[in-house]
Image (cartoon, rainbow, N blue to C red; front, side, top):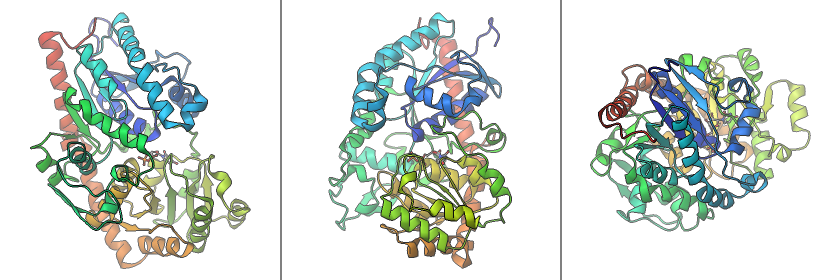
Length: 475
Ligand code: UDP
């Protein structure tokens, strides 16, 4: 990096969650690749976990390592929110309160350190759950952007809910449909569960809606979506509040090959890729419910026997925190049969890109949904809460690339849904649609695609502001 002509420096601030860090880091890489310096930050505790899981991206213990990405550089520098790791892993409200109390001053210090090091921050980008990052940016006169990490449809639902712009049912058993502009009618049991009164996770509802209190401080609102996927929602919603799609934030092509720049909480079992390479095309059932969902032991058993009875090879992600819920002896029996692989964490994007994968049994987290779309893989949808249920509706009923597994799953329903997604007419129809969507997704992020252009415009805008008034940096 030339001292005489320092690169424009953006700061990306993430909530410490796997589903939050992944899309923000992928955006950080795309921005850096265009010839910028990007510092990526989250809590020091999350930082030490990703350091332990992905040593490749952290060659030394130093925070100042510059990682070349395309024409620019990425670096990591974590902030200390003073949290007690024992509490912050288990207790979301402790984590949120602690972040809210200590996060802002730690972030101010971090920003001032950048100025002192001769790389003042010209733009701050954060994701939801840490709305205070926008307040810090505003106080320091740094232009800011929010990356909404869910779909635009879900953004619109929360927006209408927060501003009381539509009637929402309080209970998912009610029959009333919610009618919002640019979105197909949504039944109560298809709404993000966090807005229903029956939702037990009130602190999550507060965390999500908190971003809507000060989102007007952001100069740009981005979403991890693409125009071709949610065209109508975006067009109609633009009249209320423009939201710019810059996704899918999924690594493809060269980005995927260089996927070692990632921030996994667990070490991924990369050897499963060798196993996949030995399997027939479209034969393997890939099962993963993301980084948070935990099924009760009886449902784990139904999944286990349903997958085994399907007679197909399967790759199942069972995180170490839920490993003990597998039926006794199941893993050993699978080892003996040699048709399945159970891993604690997978390199999911590479798994989905493998020709061997025939379908993806997923909880429909938005990252997993977009990764499946970008890989052109049909889905068996098993949503649990939050936006997952809304995503499942879109994947199955609107995009037509998924079949729904009703809850609670039984071994028979697991086996049937897998068969529908992998074999026969319905499977062929879903795979065709999935392949069309895969092409659209890749076009959007390719050079000059709709999402790529939006990122260029964003960077140019910041560049002009910095050149024009010099206000965009902190001294
Ligand atoms: N993931 C992964 N390996 C796994 C399971 C998940 O790398 O074995 C990644 C996945 O690719 C996605 C993220 O973890 O990017 C999960 O995010 P998502 O929004 O799908 O679900 P969440 O974990 O937030 O519920």
